Image (cartoon, rainbow, N blue to C red; front, side, top):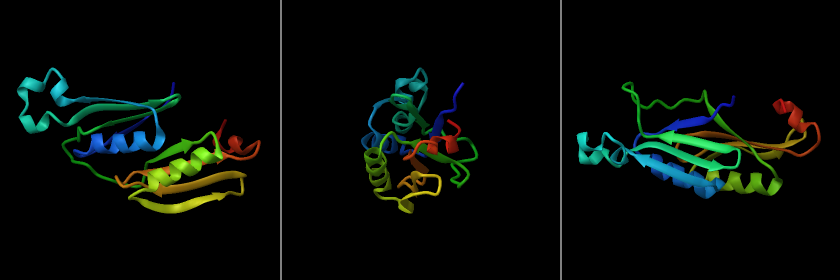
Length: 144
C-alpha cells in the first residue's frame, strides 16, 4: 500500500502539471472531460477541463484534476508535498524550479538531523517540503 498526492485545481490543472513536469521530469498524461464518455453531454467550455492527470517518474507519482467539489476549491496549509531527493544536485535544481513564481518559505539548509532540507509554496499555492539525506542515519528520521 502507498499514498499518492492528488491535487485539485480550479481550471489550471494542465498548466500546473506541465510546470511540475518541467521541474521534476517524468511522463505526463492528461485526460480531459472532452476525452471522456461524458463529452457529448457537456458544454464546449467544460471539455478542456482536466478530468485526470498523472505525472510519473520512477517511484514519483503526482496526480491531479480540475474537478472541484460542490463546496468549491479551498486552499489551506494542512497538506504539503514531500519530495525526498536522490542527490544534492537534484534537490537544489528542484527547489529553484518549483520556487519560480512562488515563495521560498525556508531556504535549503543542512539541518540538525544531517539532511539538506527546505520548503516553499509554489505559484499554484501548493506547499512543498524538499529533503535530501546527506548522512547515514538521516533517512532514519523519515522512517526508512
